[in-house]
Length: 193
Length: 224
Image (cartoon, rainbow over all chains, first blue to last red; front, top):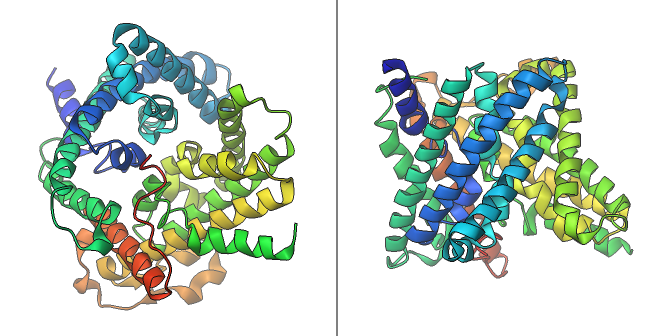
């Protein structure tokens, strides 16, 4: 139990998907102008990462490894992720039309969110068991959502700040993200993974 | 197509519409793989090969791909090219492959190749599309090498360290030590440095564009 807890803290905070591993930066910069959209995106991505990682794990173990098809990994995983995204899109449309409208064009973009493929590749390369792989995927995506929401909060304030024209928009957002990454480095040492 | 157009394609890819500094696409490898100039260069070249090949293929098949399924088809074409590069690098450039690791398969979910396929290769004949993919990829390589160089010089005081190990013995000559080893600012090699250096370099490009009397681009392509 203790190992699981440490691994999950490690995946969510210490080796944060966005700030330490640099995965999913497009959505990190693109969808964080408002807290509610960032939270919705975080929720949808958490769902996609967890579901598709479980499917990826099963396919890797029972299909690719079993029949020596390792070289098809990239192609297979991206197909699984695309289907998981499609599935999520249909689910959200049915369950919460409001959230569906809010996320709109960003939903299909989850397919090309490298956090999804990145987490899947990490857990396959880490040779994890099914339970720890699922936990790892879930914890990583919780870390992703957390940073998305924090950064969206920072950017809502940043809009009101008087920034030099040359720095306006993305550059100042990058520098703020750098400071956030420095803050997250404070977590290193709590747990290793 | 006239020669002038080819020149515009090249200039667009290398500078005017640079994937990283103007469009802010493909940010993940441009921060994760730029702890040294050599890594950035290798990552950029791998991406350029994938972009040129997949742009060419999409342009060849552009009239056969129906609009509804185009995105999955693009992703599959890119994924196939990435697999080729992945296996090729594993076989012939194993040291570099080990360093870049996870980020080679992740070229599939890099937004830059997909953005160029959708915006350019889907509507153009194969040769201009190939050229666009190649030069967008080279612009990406330049951006990654510059980010890597800045981070490496400030962070560890070297430039192109390990180039002979990763790229081949003939690159020995470009390995430089600019500052003594104990003067490095570790922060630049760590994740925060990636964000800060990229932010400052985007400002640098805006400044140069402003000097040249051009409009500065205020937002990235995906600030939709």
